[in-house]
Length: 295
Image (tube, rainbow, N blue to C red; front, side, top):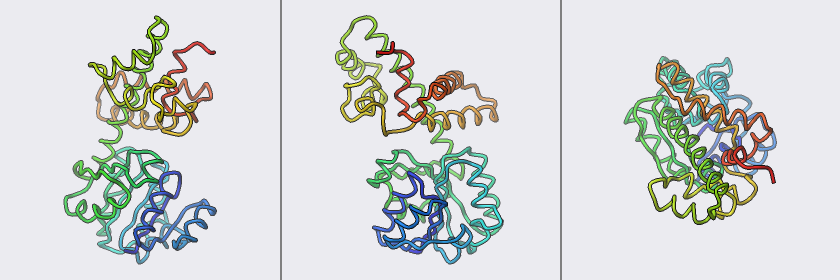
């Protein structure tokens, strides 16, 4: 299949590599010339603009940093909608606010283009391994069309509902994740301060009612989970700045819906303080450092 892939950052580039490995022909656009050159050497075709990338494509995929980029890439003078053919399916995999994707999808629909949103979970490791979870907002027919291609980049392809609901699922999931990591951090730090062995405490939590992903798989206390970022100096993983961005999306969406997210707002401020301390580049589980005395 001839696919336009726009946005080749830390997530987009490995996703594009997996599509090339699967035998697809890719029209590529990004501002990073180094990554374009690398993917061109693997068989990709470099395009001068999103418009050019979309011309003649049988599917358009975008993976961009923020809502402003999505609006520009899709709606700009040299954007996707200026080049895409009527009837061609399209999907945006960025993590942005639900309203932006609905607005862009409405503009696409006026040109006879059906657009889905499909934000992902699984991080750069999942993108490289092709094991991402895609949370897809689309009508059933479009979901069925996208499923085979998304399955070449991910393991779990979930139909969440109509366009925009993929973003809703993503920000709600990450709202829980951000809050639960703070809860586990508080508990682990409190236990250490009160004298219990951290391995013992983690074992109790992980076999009791406090059990959750943030403790069992991604425990923020160093040495509890060998594969967690906490055991390698909080490097890699899911950056605190990205968590802060997602919590911001959640609290803004809640404001628009007049829905209280009290713990979410507190979590957002704690990650904001973490960023202010210069720790925004660390994994989000480093939030625990705010509860520990400096060694």
